[in-house]
Amino acid sequence: MDIPIGMVGTGFMAVAHLKAYAQVPGAQIAALCNPSGRNLDGNFSDVFGNVGDGKAYRLDMTGVKTFREPAALFADPDIRVVDITTPTRTHVDLALAALAAGKHVLVEKPMAGTRAEAERLAAGAAEAEKRGVFLMPAMCIRFWPAYAWVKRLIDAGTHGRVLDARFRRVAQAPGWGHSHFLKGGESGGALLDLHIHDVDFILHCFGRPRSVFASGYSKVSGAVDHVVALYSVEGGATVSAEGSWAMSDAFGFSMSFTVNFERATVDFDGARGAEALKRYVPGQPVEVVKPGEGDGYVGELAYFLECVRNHRAPRRVTAADGVAAVAVCEAEAASIASGSPAPVA
Image 1 (spheres, rainbow, N blue to C red):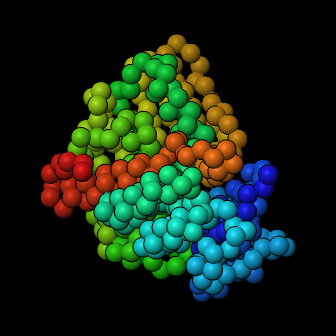
Image 2 (image 1 turned 30 degrees about the vertical axis):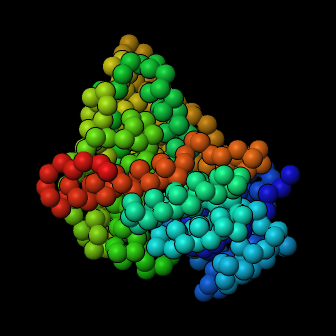
């Protein structure tokens, strides 16, 4: 059975989701909404970003409704799922309004610009869940094949315990979409818009850290645009992450991780293409791991629609997870400001 989806927002993340929905059986794009009217003709050829295939995209608008007002889309009885890819400052109010209208909601990360606002949305999501209406934050890295694969290794203890883990996600300043990215008060800078992906994955693998010690600086947004953080986690592993929008022009985008186990090392670097993920085991040849097809966008959207179809609340990533990621980022900002470790609320 097809699930009719209404997209709120028509920028870069909307295109990433639209391309992914095209690979998900039963996903029906039924409506687009943008108060400015931008891209409501389905022509996204001028929309680009830092990940994806870089190909110009045009949506077949046959049967697709268009709206300038989100409230009108939420009131449409034909829409079952609302996908929110708007600027961060709008997430909470839009998501709460969609939930109140009985729509299942996928909301882009970060859920909100502050922990308090994220908690407000999580409370609304908890109430909606009692009515069988679900919300999921779009934390796509949990679904990215290489990351999901190493998470399974960690959980299974295949190579012993983790000694250390490092995650890196760095890029030049975002030059796509609206100018809100470079307004740190709205986007949260690289700390909240980019680095939060690795923060969430660290929470997914190691649980909530007791504290975090971070260093960083602002370069383009007025908020934290480069951060290096060290997390105090249960089990004693040395876990760190680096996130940045401070690279020079033409640097592009890079995401990577290294996880060092007692009896193996796993290394991922997206720049290596078909050999992005490698496993090093003493006494064995280096293994190029093929963790699966698709990307994290396809995985998260397929999972969410499966939950909706089966009337089952999402559990692979929850509103509480979205709150926790924002809380850790707030602790990192506090640590940067103080020069000392900061507890995680």
